Image 1: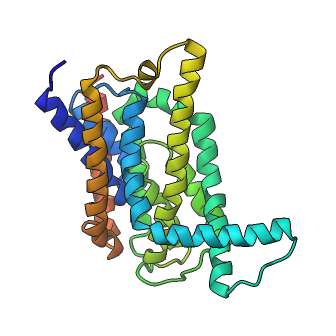
Image 2: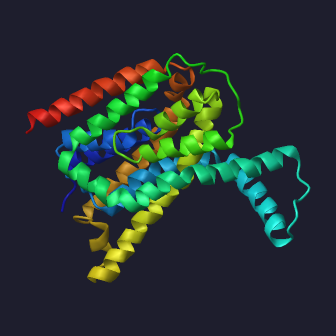
Image 3: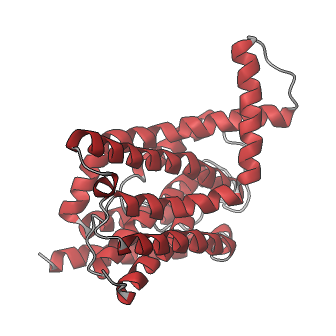
Length: 300
């Protein structure tokens, strides 16, 4: 099969849309779904496409937060080793102990979303396949209303440490964001801000939460790949759902587009988010949500 330039552009745009919308609170999954509908592409693109387009943003965040992740992992491992193996608390500086607690809270906050994704992913996929833009539109409206709800909150300044109540509430908010159209960064940061956290701390916690959750979703996709291979006796390529060899190139374009778009969105567009102008994102989500619902109704 020869290269289709228009098809290649579509996949590159999908990657760019994924990258930009992963950073700002307007739902990456919802916008990728809407873009696929607009481009008249099959929603079920195969697991390889889903793995690559999701991993693109993950790679960028791993790069951006690399030092912070190493610091958290190191202090978590040191404290856990001494506590579990030697049954004693090691002599750590206050910052190191805070890093250990912060790492534990990240893990705890990821549990609700992990459970929803694990047990309800097939149901969510079925709803999305059946109701498409209606499902996404409702999610976008929820995101818009949540952002509007906190638009007058004390956003720029607030506490910098997250407590256990904050952790549970942010984790539950992230679980809701498993549904397409509901922005993960929007729900988690809005919940943190409403709990009195400053926007810088809220966003950093939100993006650090994204990393283990995204890793988990990618691993779940790989599990589905190998499960299909063993249960149905099919090859790796068949399980990945790649229509033809040329699609490896299209998927690579989407992957690279997601990496670059996530990085530049974080460095540029992200500043609008950090400035506390959440009402503009709220208006956008509500408008796109309503248009998505009308599109579904007109198509019936």
